Image 1 (cartoon, rainbow, N blue to C red):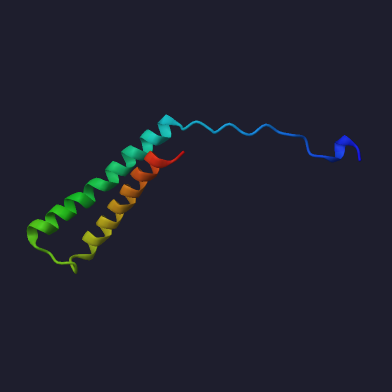
Image 2 (image 1 turned 90 degrees about the vertical axis):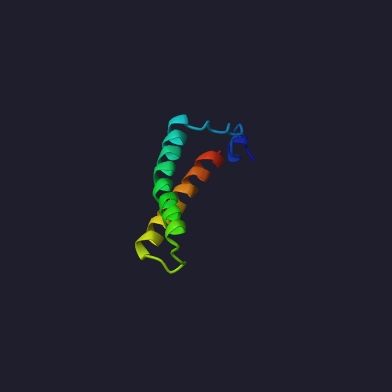
Length: 78
């Protein structure tokens, strides 16, 4: 066997650095998505709406959960 039959030894890749701009953008977008959901939760608590409240409120709170997920992803990604 010749040495050309074996794959060349490659150095292990260095981990890529995080982009500060992308992290900041995801944090800002997450906070923007989170604000309406928090306001809906406050309004529901003050108005005494039960779990079967307005479907629009439920939709807005789901968007807020997406914002929270985006914030968590931005902080924990490598």
